[in-house]
Image 1 (cartoon, helix red, strand yellow):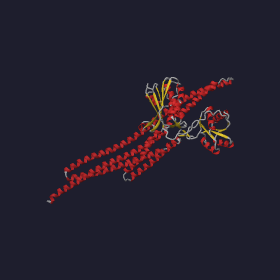
Image 2 (spheres, one colour):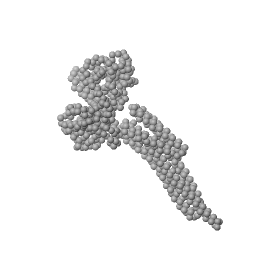
Image 3 (cartoon, one colour):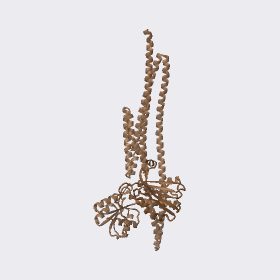
Image 4 (tube, helix red, strand yellow):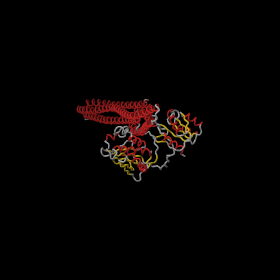
Length: 612
C-alpha cells in the first residue's frame, strides 16, 4: 500500500514543489514590477533634479540678458527646491556603491553649478556685467551640467542592468519549472506552460515599458535642448528688436537736434565773419536744441531706471494741490481740472520732483488725447495690492500703496496700444507732436521707486493711468529748505574744478569765472590733491565722478579728510554705484547732472556755499 501510494506522494510532492515554485515565481514577478516602479520613480526624481538645475540656469541667463529681476523667480524657486529633491533622492538610493558614488558626483557638480550661478548674479548685481558674462563663457557651468547628465546616464545604465539581471534569473527559474513539469504530469506541464507564457507576456510588458521609458527620457532631453535653443533665439530676437527700436529713436531725435545746432552755429560763424552780430536767434535755436537733447537723455535714463533720485517723505495731496497753477498753465483753458483727494492719505517716500514730472507728463498726454477740450481728474487714495494681484503682475510686491490716478475723457486706447504704451519712442501722436518717451519715463521712475503703473482704457471711453507708490511707515523727515534766491549773492570764493575732459573742464571753468568765482582747475584726482594742498583757501570742490585711477567719490573723501569743512559738488552725465546706490543719491550728497545751464550752476554753487 505504501509502495502504491509512493508515486502519489511523490506526485503530490512534485505538485507541491511546482506550486511552491510557481508561488515563488509570482512573488519574483511582483518584486520585479515593484523594483521597476522604484527604478522609474528614482529616475523621475533625477530628471526632476536636472530640470530644476536647468530652470535655475535659464533664470540666471534671462536675468543677465535683460536685467529684469522677474527672471530670477524660477532661479530662486529652483534653488529653494533642490535641497528637498536631493533629500528624496538620498532616501530612495539603494545601498549600492556605484549608485552612491554617482549621486555624490551629482551633488558635487550641482554645488559647483549653483556656486557659478550665484557668483554671476552677484557680479551682475554689483554692476560687473562683463565679468559675469566672462564667467558664463568660461564653461564652468556647462562642465558641471555635463557632469550631472553623465552621472544620471550612468545611474540609468545601472538600473537597466539590475532589471536585466532580475529578468535573467526569472528566465532560469522558468526553464527549471518546465523541465520539472514534463517529468511529473502532462496536465501540470500544460498548466505550467500556460503560466510561463503568461509570465513571459508580463515580462515583455515590463521590458517594453522600460524601453519606452528610456526612449521618452531621450525624447525629453532632445525636446528640452530644442526648446532652450528656440527660447534663446526668441529672446535674442526680442532683444535686438527692442535695441533696434531704441537706437533708431535715439538716432532720429538726436540727429534732428544736432542738425539744428550745427546749422545754427554755422550760420552764426558766417555772420560773425562778415562782421554781422545779429546772431541771437541762432544761439537761441542751438541752446533750445541742446536743452531738448539733454531732456531726451534724462528721459532715457529714467526709462532705464538709472536716473539719480533724491527721495523724501511726500504728502501726495499737498503735492497735487501745489501743482494746480502749473497744470492750468500747461493744459490750457479748454481742459477742466478736477481733484479728488482722499482723507487720511498715507505718506510715500519718493522723489517729489519726479512725481510732479510724472503727473505733468500724464496730464499733457491726457490733454492731447482729448484734443485740448475735456475733463481731467486727478485722484489720490490709499490702496492695498494683495497677493492675488501681485501673482498676476510682474515685479509687483503685495502691500500698501499710495495711489495717484489721472483720468481723461479722451479717445481711449485699444489693447494693442496699451501693450506698447510704455515702450520708448512708441507714440500714436502725429509727427513732431511727441517723442514717445513720456510714459516710458513715468514707467521707469515708478519702477525705480518700487512702485507699479497700471493703464485702464477702452476706445471711446477715456483712459485712467494709476501710479502706485509704496506707503512710507517711518518718521517724517524735516524738509530741507531750498536755497532759491541766493544765486544773486556776490561770488568771492575760490573753487577747485576737477574734470578729466579738457573741453568740459574749460567750459565749466569759464562759466564759474563768468559768475565771479576764482577758479583753479585740475585734470585728475592726483593733480587736484596737489593743488588743494598748495591753495588752502579753496571753499568748494566741484568734481566729475567718472574719472580714471581716482574717481570723484574717492577724491572727495581724501580732500575732505585733508581739509575738513570743504564743500563738495559732484557732477556727471551718468553714474552708478559712486554717489548713487539703487537709484538713490547718497545722504548729504550735492549733485548737478550734466549738461547744466549757467543759471543752474550758479544756483547750485550758492546753495552749497551758503548752507550752514
